[in-house]
Image (cartoon, rainbow, N blue to C red; front, side):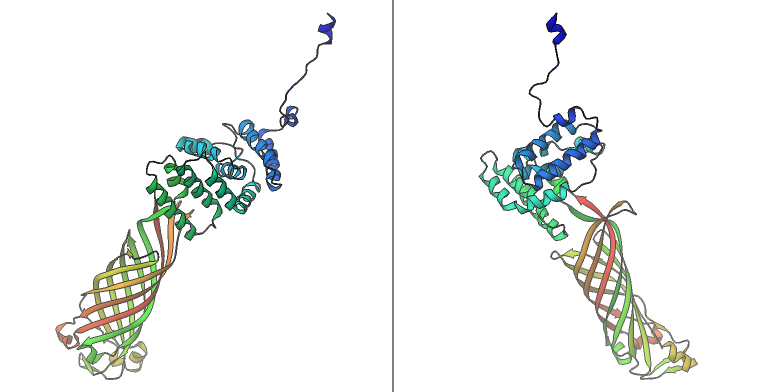
Amino acid sequence: MLLSLLQMKVFSQTDSIEIPDFYSQQPVSEKITHYRSLLLDNIIADNKTKAKELFYYILQKLDDNHYLALYPDEKWLVSYFLRDFGMITSEITLIDSLYVSKLNNKVRPAEDQLYRILLQKVDQNKENIIDEIKASTLLSGEDQDFLFLLLQTYTVENAQDNQEILNRKSDKFLTEYPKSKYSGYIRNYIRYEYAQKGFSWGCELYSGAVIFGNKTSEYLSDGATFGAGILWGIYKFQINTRAVFVFSKLKNDITYNNVIWHKDERAQAMIGELSLGYLFYAGKKIIVSPVLGLGWLLVNPYENDKKKNPDLEDIEIDSYASPLFGIDLGWEFYHKNYFNYNFNKNMFAFYSLNVRYVFQPVSFPNKYNYLNGFVHSISLSLKFGFGGVRRVY
């Protein structure tokens, strides 16, 4: 009876990390914020023992079906920091669409500096981490190569050139290990390659020179040019609509409806073009595009000359449309894939510097067939535009 009156409730072997939480009525989200801060402090202090204890406590006690305590990238970075490579290789293969769906429905932690500090710590110790991966007897060659590849995703600058490096290394890994258990993760989360999809649109500004040939050169002098165009793309096909103005003058008199347009007077020639090109990438930035289409030549006096001499007002000599062909060489000094929030889809934008040569025969109506000949056009242009892309897995 005395013993029953004196009984008491005692605790033994309680996990020391749980003691502060036993009497706490904190909401789970606040606990997650608290323990993320503790983990952050110990990572800064380089206290791997305490950081490991906190890391597993967060995963086991706070990360559940409703709350996300650590983002996947943070988990992998902590594992690199702790040299717990088995955590990465075992868990990363479990990621699938169901895993991602559950992840997106969880309550996310408050924003803090944990991810940034982890990146810094892992980057500072990159060489040591690589050496420990190489020295591990528990990792296969495939595991090691994957860990090297994943590590590089966190230790390269966020630039498109570096993404291309990651794409090449990913392709190499997938070639060496075609049935790798990591292939799904690499294709979805490391290798980001895009190809043009559907329509694109752009503009072109250019300048250059025109050289007239045959009988055309007997009446029109060669001249400098200035023009503009609109580009319409369908995958790698490109429709060019261009208009170029040629600053020329008459080399001989031209008679138009009994009006004489005198030699040495200025002539304004315009070359219109509707053509089709196909973009071949000869390198990472070099584009070669053959051009085939139709062009025509329109010749008339300058507006100021028409005002001075009203007899020139009606002069307008227009050729028939005739085939043209040429080549366009471009250097794409800017090409970026991005997500367009206005259109809610992935897109690309580009700028390129192009050199273009086109040969075009010109044929006039019988009344002016003495002007028949051909045109050589050389231009330097700046092109810019945008369009849609699709992810290539």
